Image (cartoon, rainbow, N blue to C red; front, side, top):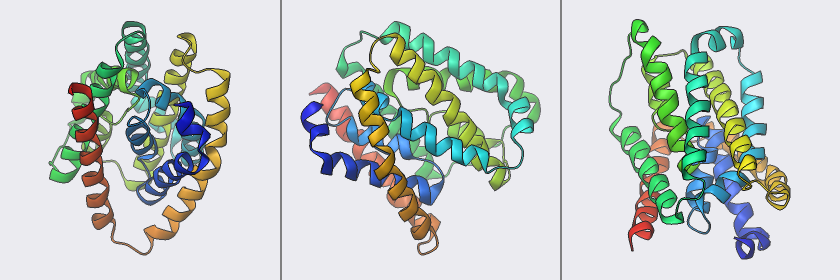
Length: 248
């Protein structure tokens, strides 16, 4: 990890790319960054590097939405489940082999990308949120606690709620803020989020925000559907490479 991070250019390019995806689609910074960084370092360390950039970008996204109180009241069971799942996974898998975490990260990316490419129609009745929310949150927390990726199944779950666009963007900001705080606290408790990684994480803010600025510019110049296809195909490739590394 140190050799990779001490070379500022490749590390910065990863965060610029991740920020560009976030600025274009409204999500994807941790997914892209952890996925690519996972090719060079253990997923837990890659996730630790993402704590500060993820918090900063999602707090901004959270603050710009109109219905924070309503979203919290609706989704608090899912958020509680996510925190519980994250801490459970961190406690169980804190000393797990790197190959297990790499395989989990690869699987999460492959599932997320496949769902995104297939555009599977999903709709969740309001009555089902009582049990589906905590279940989706806990499962996502388990996946995130192992791999550092909190996309599955939470992001498809939010899509099934059929939220209006502005409300969905704010919901994603809230969810990734809470999940990042839970992961950061769990990693710090288990000694993974050290002072040196914290310094690197703060430094990653600059390229991440540069990428977000580029993403905002790109969003008005490329068809969102085209960019989403490129994004998900790229995730498939990264996920496949991680799976290959975990078994061979």
